[in-house]
Image 1 (cartoon, one colour):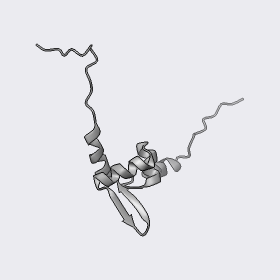
Image 2 (tube, one colour):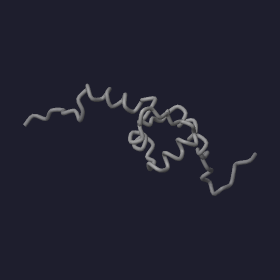
Image 3 (cartoon, helix red, strand yellow):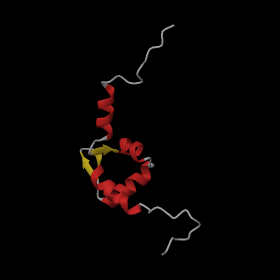
Image 4 (spheres, helix red, strand yellow):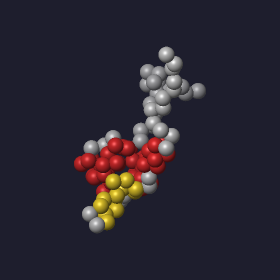
Length: 88
């Protein structure tokens, strides 16, 4: 039997999926998947960030604004050597 390579996705699907991930504006359902945040928490954070756009019943989240807002919650790396810093 001959072993042949079978791609998981067709080469045409890859750019389409990449475009979906790189969109500037996301709907709630898309943003929930991208950011792994529940609907309620996403609504709260996006509202605080001022990243929500509402048009004719469609709600969009601006990724640039939302990403900048999420950086507020970024914690710096911690020292893993027993809590002591290397002071010289």
